[in-house]
Image (cartoon, rainbow over all chains, first blue to last red; front, side, top):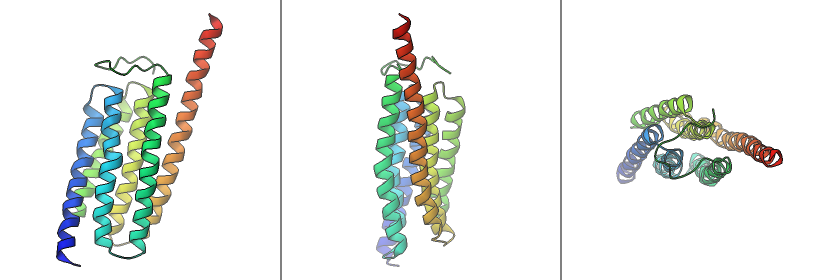
Length: 107
Length: 93
């Protein structure tokens, strides 16, 4: 394994771990549903890109890299779609954006 | 290094579970479950390289697809329920 790509992959993995942790903290701590969704979509897109790219650098040119690329493509396709459907459903159900703290209206 | 990343992902999965348990609306819970599934995919692909078993990547691929379909099905159910409720309210008035 080339050492430069090794260092680059460790940096990518560390950044991805940091993004994952910050997004999880935000999804727990932020006051409103839409802000929580913002934090969760941060871990969905950016952290997935960083971590899977870091692992892909470790894998080199092999079948595992192709599988990782497929996982990344699926995550990037499905994450924003699920976020959009979630926001759409929440908005249709009457959960207002812009309220400062959440009022627990339905179960 | 894989250990650090997998521990970060595990901590985030615990935080997402906490949000799913105490989320006030049902959409918070769906959001947390979706996040949990995505983190499971990432954790499976990290574990595949942590233990040197690339078979786990197939599991991660399958889990990504199943998680997406499941979240969309649950959302479709709740969305049609809320639309039905709005229609009932309009009919009642």
